[in-house]
Length: 272
Length: 229
Image 1 (spheres, rainbow over the protein chains, first blue to last red):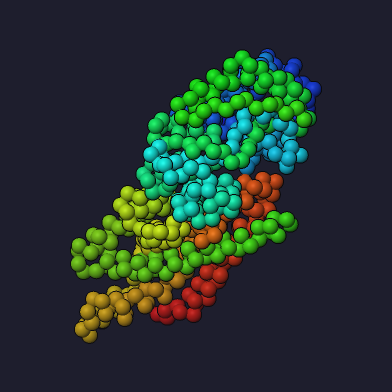
Image 2 (image 1 turned 135 degrees about the horizontal axis):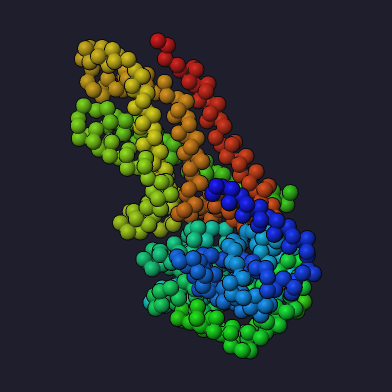
């Protein structure tokens, strides 16, 4: 019985997916009120996109996604969050697994060729997180002889080694949480990735860590949409609206306010 | 085929690292496995208990946990370090340690089943001519036991070679920070999300190139060295 139910559910999902795909762009707007909106977020990034133990979702990306979905006419219970890991974001948008993605998704020219972007709704930059009492690491050039942590396959750590501190030692883990554990224990000195992601980890243990605060790259986080989406202009309007009515600031402060990281100025939406 | 021209050498380097992990872990796990098996069949009860305790603990613990423990428990908490200065060297040998002790328990059990295939008369005859326990094991029992378990030992070694991928848990890299195969695969997929299938195939093929010879050699050797009774 159970299997049949699951099979039926899978079938229904597949059908819904294919219908949505057939409909293309022309049923946007009209599906508000009835259908659900599926939004891809990260499930494992505290302060940005995080699935709590009780199954609820929290984070800056989650709050922004909720704001945008509500602006598009969806009720809160019509929003379905789907886990989008970095490697499958383009695929999810193309095959209709999700309707939009807010998952620390940087706008790049390569990605623009495959999907559309609204926003940016946040400008992040690569930065360094250290223990709160660390004073000798002040930027990417001060890492010679230090032990720097990052996740497997990420470019930020390589960027530092190649362009700033050649004598840095890299430790790679499969998750940032392990980096945090090792920095807390004093076995590693620093961790690097986008500042807002670092802020999410600093927020978990306020006072234990600090972010050096000298971003040395620019990542424009955008809302990923399927190519040719008709909602793009409306989402751009909503993002600008969130800058003005305080929703953007509130989303940041609710999720990252205690991280010790200052909220930067809102970015300018790029209507390309 | 941009992937090959861009990342081909990195893929080769990463498999080189995997091969080094497998090579050292293979040697140490075989040696340690023999020691454990000796413990488990020895006439001294304490040694038997120690052998059994090690085997039952490690064989029933997930390798990821053992691997994680070597870095976060052994190295970070207890201060055991193979290289105080160079992180990548420390991580490499910690991974070898985890793989060796974990695999040695399987080697031990395979050997013990091999020892059971040696007819009792062999050990009795050896004792009758005055050989000590170690001489008995070394000259009479183990040579016959080893020859009868070449194939199952090869399976253990093949599993171990594939288990080197768990080293990604503690971030094992080369001096130039190239990951071992599974970390390298993850990195490539992150950067080339449109070629995931190709990347899968390359890495699956890479592991087959590493492990197939083990099976072939074992098949040949088990015939060549079979104990004729």
